[in-house]
Image 1 (cartoon, one colour):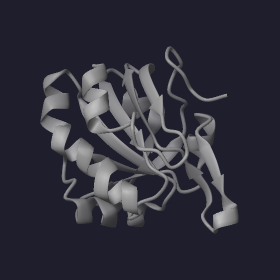
Image 2 (image 1 turned 90 degrees about the vertical axis):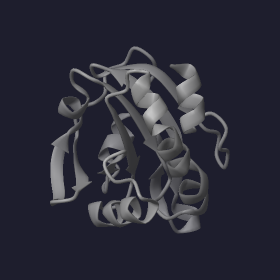
Image 3 (image 1 turned 30 degrees about the vertical axis):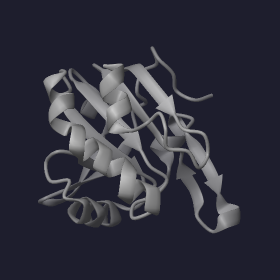
Image 4 (image 1 turned 90 degrees about the horizontal axis):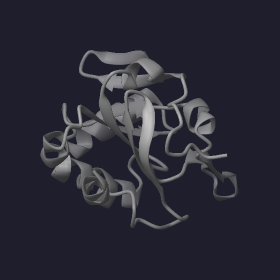
Length: 160
C-alpha cells in the first residue's frame, strides 16, 4: 500500500550525493524536525525527469523555501554516482539534495515502486512529490504512469 498523508517516512539507509562525495543517510533522520519536499523520478537523465520535473523544483526552490520548506530532495532508483552527475548536469547545487535509492529499498518501503523490467529498466520509482513535516507526510501526489501533472514544483507550491 502506498504511503499516504499522516504516515511516517520509513527509516531506510540511502545514499546522498554531496560535494564531498557519497554520504550514507538515514531517511528518518533526514526528515526529522524539519519540513522536506521529496520528489521521486523514474530515473536520472530520463527525458521528462530532466526536461520538466527537476527544472520545476529548481525554478520554484526559493518560493518553496519562502513557504517554510527547509529542504528539497530528489530521489531515484539509481546509484549515488549517477545521481551526483545528474545533479551537476541540472545545476542542482545546494538547492536540491540528490538521494540515491540504488536497491529501491526506500521506494519499496513507501509502496511507490514501478516495475519496468519488461522495458529493460528494472524496478523504478513512480513519479511523485510529497511534503513531510517532522517525518510525517502532509501532502502526496503520485502521477499516473507516463503523466506529469500533479508532482511538479509548481503543484507542490500550490499545495502548501
